Image (cartoon, rainbow, N blue to C red):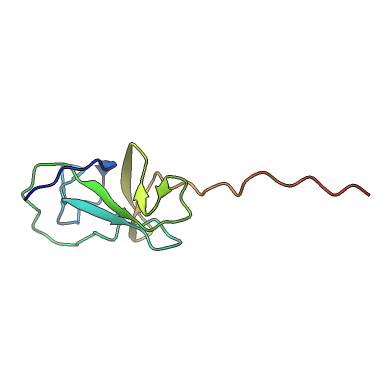
Amino acid sequence: MIQSIDMSAVSECNVSMCAYNRERRCHALAITVGGYRDHSCETLHPASLHAGRTEIAGVGSCKAVECKYNEDYECRAENIRVVFNRGRADCLMFEKKSSGPTPAPAAS
């Protein structure tokens, strides 16, 4: 059975050493982004052979709970870009959630 669900698309990925990357596009069925404090692509699979799928990947799971686009471990950004940065594949859409308004100082 094939399911069709709405996921944030991986619009670009420059991690050419990944098995799912072909022509700067990710062709995994879905990727997992991040640990609890980082925003790296956990689906990264270094390999010289590349996957044959033609469909573009979506974000199946996001564990970057500090990201403003994370809602119940799902990415709510329209799309994301993944780039190789400092030895890992990072989601460029990561934006830390705001901590909310700063309370006013107490009156003296």
